[in-house]
Image (cartoon, rainbow, N blue to C red; front, side):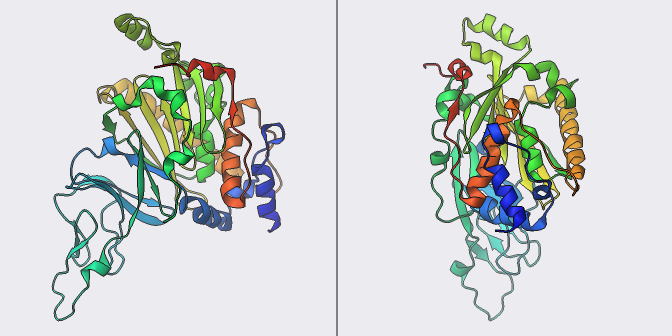
Length: 385
C-alpha cells in the first residue's frame, strides 16, 4: 500500500477520540476516486430514487452511477426494475438523465433499436439479412431493493440483502410511520464542484449550521439542539429539536403525541443518502460522484401529500440553504488542493463523520469498524407502538 493510501486508511479508521479530517489529497486524487468507484459505488447498495417518485407505468429515472448509466423503470407489468441505460447495439445512452415517462418501448435515439420496459430487445429496424439474437441483446438488469419505498441499486451480482445493512434502524423511526408517505416529490438536480465525500460530510453533520446557515436552517433546527442518537459505519441517526409552531397545531388537533414529533431524525446511509425525517415528510439529499472533483446532487422527498412542496416559502427556504451548502462545499474543495496544510481534530458533534470515515475504511481497506453506539437521546425515539 502506498503512503497516500496508508494515510487514508489510518485516518479513516480512527475512533472519535483520535479522529482527524481525512488527508486533503483523498478529495482530489483521480486514482483514489477510481478506487472508491470500484470498491464502493460498483459494489455497494446505493440510493437512486423512491417508488413514490415513479407512480405511473412508464415512469423512469435515469442516472449515472460512478460512470455507469442506469435507468429505474416502472414497467407496465407493475414491476420496478434497474436496467442498463446503454443500447446493446453501439453503446448509445437510451433515455435522458432525470425523471420522465415513456408510453411503451425504450427506443435508442441512434438507430432505433427498441426494448421492452423489462429490458428485452423487441425490434431491430432494417437489419437486412443479418439475424440479431434478441435474447443475447437484452439490457442488463441490476439488483434493486426497497426500504419504505426508497429504492437502492447494487451493481454487484452477489450482494447481501439491503436489510442486512439496515438491520436495527426501523426501531428508532417506527414512530414517524413513514409508510404514510405515499406521494413523491422529484426535487432538483445540481452539479457541484465538490468531491462526493465533502458533500456527504457536509450533508450529515449539524456542526456547521450556526455559521453556514445562520439565516436559514439555524433558525429552525439550531446547532445547539442537535445530538447523536445511534449508529456505526453502516448507518447513523442524529437528531435535533425543531423550532416551529406547526407541530403545536398538530398536537392540539390530534391530542397527545410523543415528544419525538417535535424533533427530526437525520438518517445517513453511505455512500450517497442523507435524509431528514419529521412527522410531516421524509426529505433527502443524494450525492452521486462525477469524478474526483465534481458531484451531482439530487434532492427529493416523500410525504402524505405534495401540498407542502408547493408552498412558495418552503421552496425559497430550501433553495436558499442548498445554495449555502453548494458555496461552502465548493469553497472547501479549493482548500483540498493544498500540499502544505492538513486537517485537524474532529469534535463530538462530528461523531457521524467518524462513522462515515469508518464506512470508507471498511469498504476500501477491509477495516472492522467500531461497535454500534447509542446515546441516552435514543430513548426519545424508542417508543412502543
